[in-house]
Amino acid sequence: MSFEMIPVGRYQTRLYLNVLSDESVSALWQELIDTLPWRQEHIRLFGRERAIPRLQCWIGDVQAVYRYSGLTLQPEPWPPHLATLKQRLEQKTRQSFNSVLCNLYRDGQDSMGWHSDDEAELGPAPVVASFTLGATRRFQFRDRHNRHDRISLDLPHNSLLLMPAGLQSEWQHQVPKTRRPTGERINLTFRYVYPLAAANE
Ligand SMILES: O=C(O)CCC(=O)C(=O)O
Image 1 (cartoon, rainbow, N blue to C red):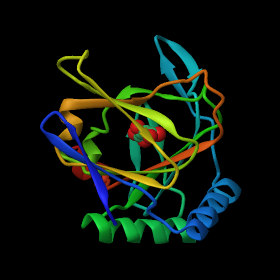
Image 2: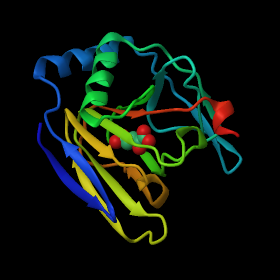
Image 3: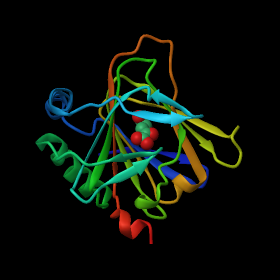
Image 4: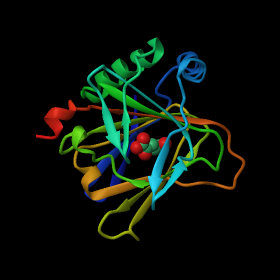
């Protein structure tokens, strides 16, 4: 399968298109919508409790407990089509993943703010594989030390963005809100989470 190289500073991200067959991607979409326990999470920001602007679900092996923004996410078990996609991505990227953060953007007002995937339990240089289904959304990177230095790309249905080791410590990313009429989108970021005790050493 071919990919486009997208340079982000000194890092080469890869964008793969049409990763799954039409049949497999439809079956995966239906499984994710119908069976995942999508949750509205809240975070504390400037002393106030706020609903995050999207629904989320954390899936993974039992030991893959994930902490971010004051939330502790206990993993849900792997549903079959998602487990198959994980194996496929492991073969393609020659990486191991033991968990995936699933985000459901209901419309253009759902979003994800600037951040890096750099929590201690991801280790010092995580590789993150980000698979998109549904509506195309704009995805942006910005340099952590020069915030005006930005790179934007559109992530279409059935695409995979592979973010290499090292990128997270120098670049942030976001999915901004859009006023354009926008349908549902699911994004799956596959990660390898080290057990919390080891990450805290
Ligand atoms: O929805 C996306 O494309 C990005 C998701 C993301 O940034 C994350 O899960 O950390």
